[in-house]
Length: 394
Image (cartoon, rainbow, N blue to C red; front, side, top):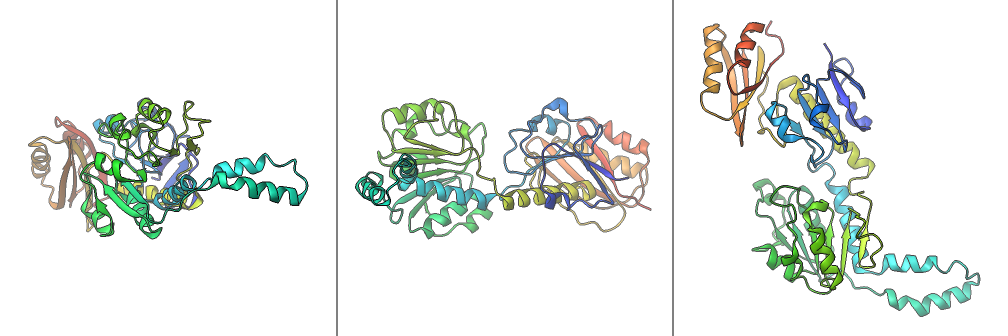
């Protein structure tokens, strides 16, 4: 039977093509879908039918998905980190250039000269006025990068390419990210040290309880008066009132962001873009392809890659059929599952078990097809949230 994928946004055709038509039905309306594929749609808990096995977002952030309730139901939530990294990096480059030169102001000024019809007079006016839009070069300036994941590491590398000194800060820097990072990126001991010494600070953090409002009054107070703050990550990372207060007292020169708010629109010391960091054809294709591939691998094999709430776990398919089991991360549950298999004389061919926070996830390859009654026994174990049979043992 074909698996049904509910799409709640327009998804790139290149991504949808990764789900073959002979095995998948894709539509924007399904009463009982097997999975949900979306971008920015604000998904509510009541929008997720009992039939849903997984949710994938063609993008990095998942603040539009009720992740906690999905975890409680044993539903993995996938995202596509890094797929839009280059697109965001290029927009950060744009932000740096706009912040260093009077480009926006100069363009706005030129538009006021449309009534000058004489080319000579226009040229004379421009030559007389252009000095007010003078800026400074990025070469030799110091760029601070807060968050050195897929996007932040690219931004750091870009800063080096532009001839900037680059200082980075990321207390949760992974080994993989560290390998991506150039040795020329200097490490800041803390955020205060980074903010106090940088001409430009670029934010690249997810919205978590620990990062919400992280950029606060204390940090903004130590910024040099000629510095710029760039936010192409998430609006909630910067404390809005602290930002407004710092701008009012001219604590730093300019705020450049991809997240307009009513209080910021129209300010001469703010450059705003309409959340277009990932708005390129290439980024949308890359995100959709990654999300679709991860969704397919989970539905067909139970493998988990780039989930925000499940542990990363993959097991090569050899033979037989496979059990996919999600449960609370407490003792004895896996033992109870294995006891049920043993009582039914079902041989375990291979298995893997991993946990993440309060959830554990298991893949168990078996040689005999379990009956519905056996599967129901597993589902009745206290703490088991999801049991799925993948494939046919015949």
